[in-house]
Image 1: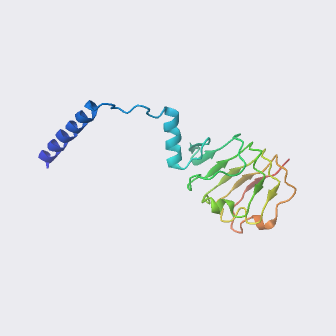
Image 2 (image 1 turned 30 degrees about the horizontal axis):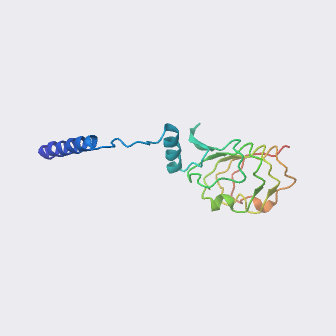
Length: 161
């Protein structure tokens, strides 16, 4: 077993030496740190322009003040906190939007200071872990009772203008 490890290391060393002696190695046009961070975020399930990280013990996706016109696709399914504050293009929450986007593990949603004027029936379907929802600073006049999931654990709802 030990002999196999020595042979493997020798082959890997030879391969590395061959690569380093090749013209054009290392490749030019390597991604910048910003491009690399964006690529890593995309692999993790983070929409472009958003910040996705573990914050306060929760997997958080923050897309604050980006000029979005809808909830972005590509949010990781394990996201627990979705922060979409100050995106005035977000005007409606369609029925089943979170189910369609595959983000039903949400515990907190922040949509304050958008331009939400309509929440359709079924908008919060299957969000059984949702405990906090902030819709303050929007243009809402009413939210139909059909918008809420019957098994929702909502503890804090903010809707002040």
